[in-house]
Length: 404
Image 1 (cartoon, rainbow, N blue to C red):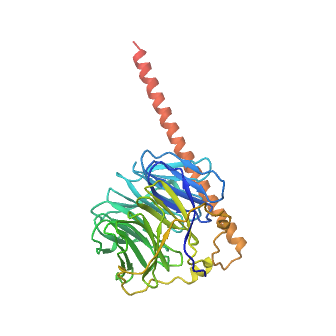
Image 2 (image 1 turned 90 degrees about the horizontal axis):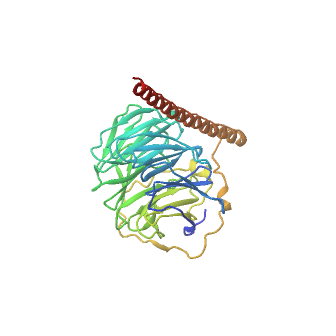
């Protein structure tokens, strides 16, 4: 384990408006970002590779999320739709009208088979990934729902809303298990700890709160930012949490000790989104300055297998981290280093031979792509059928008018 300061590796420019969301693919080869400019960008971590710009949404893209295999990419938009993309040079996608208002959040279940969405229509909805079939709706929030996530084991769903609550749902019974009401304002973001035993939520009241999902106790409370906290992300080890705020900073918290480790000054204007890579070796952030930045974590580089084995829950003492020491880090000048080292695949602990595991993962990934390609073709056929029907109807009208 090394104990160094995080460093800015590179930044990507290509969006024409505020960046709203970022997410890394499993193998770290791609980084997706959504923006108010209605576009998705898929950036390649390999130097000198051209980015893909995906167009299709008719309004701001509010959220992006890679499927667990990394072979599909979901996006939600202010145009009320969700699109599922195959993140290659063609940039083909299927689209479905998911909600009756802005879609704020989209997240794949860990098995890749389902998708949860959240919207300004006050609902949380669950869909099948294949053919995007509607499964069920969760509708107890009384204001916009900003965020919804599956638990690591896929049994629970957590949602955050402008009704100032965080709600925990049982996916099987579809019932609300608990409502957390400690936030003093809109709750902007929520996510599960990698162990699945607790959740962290960010709020417009400048706070971050951590609760135990078994006892529903408030474990930790942080008031470190001077403006709204817009997003957060757990390090895969579960030991650290990173936050992005409208005060333009990113902050890294040590959850085991309940203290602030670093404050990062990178964005000009609000930092709107942040996400760790699947190994925790890197994290990405986006802001109102239209930039996407990639940072090297440095502070906790461990083997991915050890991460899975050694996940612990945050310290149970409630921490009101108001006046804690912090390390202030300005953005280093000069160009970012080459990211060749970022090509390494995360090493998951396996009981079967690694070659067999990677072959199976590849097959699963290819099945994702094949089923999505079938969905794309089906959607095109439906459109073609609709156009043919319209043409026939028009022809019949012309014939009727021409008949004396």
